[in-house]
Amino acid sequence: MKPIHRLFTSARSAIAALGASLLLGGCAQGGGELGYYWQSVSGHLQLMWAADAMDDWIARPSTPPALRERLRLAQRARTFAVQELHLPDNPSYRRYADLKRSSAVWNVVAAPPYSLQLHTWCFPVLGCVGYRGYFSRADARAEADLLAAQGLEVDVYGVPAYSTLGAMNWLGGDPLLSTFVHWPEGDFVRLLFHELAHQKVYAEGDTLFNESFATAVGRIGSAQWLRTQASAAARSEAAASDARREAFRQLTRETRAQLEAIYASNSAPAQNRQALEAMKTEAMKQFRERYAALAATWPAAQRAGYDHWVATANNASFGAQAAYDEWVPAFETLFEQSARNWPRFYDAVKALADQSAEQRHTALRALLAPPTPAAKEPSRA
Image (cartoon, rainbow, N blue to C red):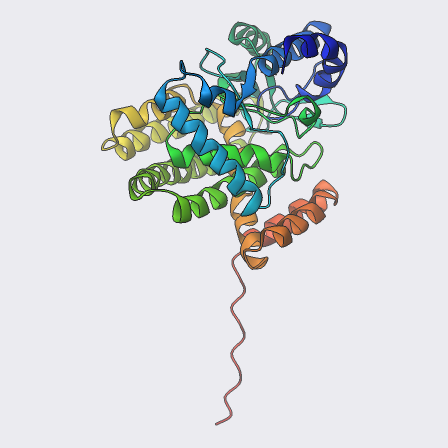
């Protein structure tokens, strides 16, 4: 995008970005404060303006060879997403922006001391969601401090990418970002497909549905990419990464279930809170001990992110994690029931999104249930 065009469209883009930059994965909600709205608009515009066409980056002599090759891979993955996964064919992820920082945005999440139910913020179009995003980590930390002063447990974490649900396609679309471009190939394409999935189906106000759907698309789609497009080395690296990820998710799922069982007694009289706190402390202690045993053989470079998450884990971080994997197995089952046909799968997901939250959650729970064994035919002997 040329500077003169940027100037000409700044007023229009600011209006659009007010809604679009408050969307998924990091800038997803507003709390009514004008300052929050302004940081969302200005932060998103700066990100958009930093982006240039991938072909331009590839052609520049100053572009590092590793980045040039990754951008070429991104172009192939973007074509694959359209042709094989039937994800949107639009301007998104056809430009690249070097943000010169570790995260695109920083999310703030919060939860009560004895609950995994996330504190929510509500915003028109999106409904109510359980995270609030900032383009400045300092601003995110300040919001977290305010929530902590109210007695909530809080977590602040960096987000490598987010989606504007296609609202910015008229202005060039969501760009590929330096915050994840050099990830291992399997993780890289997984996130790319995840973000594109948000533009395919979105259910207002249902974070668990939206994130679990996108996670399922990323998992299934990246497996298809690795199987048909990647090298043996990339497949081996992805398999090891997936094994670590799944083992960690299993551990956190079990810990979430344990904490939820403990918090079910949250209505006990105040004098029993000491016992409740003791049970919670023991559950977290067991979680960290089990993680230490699980990760003991993992390469140091591969466990750093996990180590940090475990060290700071609390109700807020457990609650936020649940949004990304709570319904994933249900969506994977739905994909199989759709005969692994992507358009048929998306139609089924859209049908769920059109239902009430209660109806879609009931349907997803049914997909999680193990199949009922077929009745045996009576003996004719």
